[in-house]
Length: 112
Image 1 (cartoon, rainbow, N blue to C red):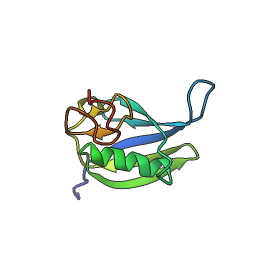
Image 2 (image 1 turned 135 degrees about the vertical axis):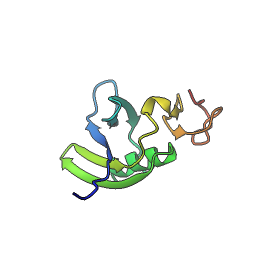
Image 3 (image 1 turned 45 degrees about the vertical axis):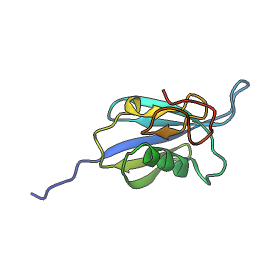
């Protein structure tokens, strides 16, 4: 029998705007059952592109992507070390980093 490589799935979900919040995306770590909600970055063409960049900035190696349905995409990784709860996230713009201190993305927030 051939060796089948273990892979990790992240789901990127579209969250519609409400009366209190604009259009957002939810990044779900299916391995650790954790998620984070991010403000939509309109400089990115798709929510999938934004999710890939966020995970890459956080130190998670992305090796593939896919489309589930009209509101969800998947990102595939071979990294099993980091949980979303282990990643430092800016309390203002939700930028991911392996650093601590002031956010290099917005310059306003700090990493929790």
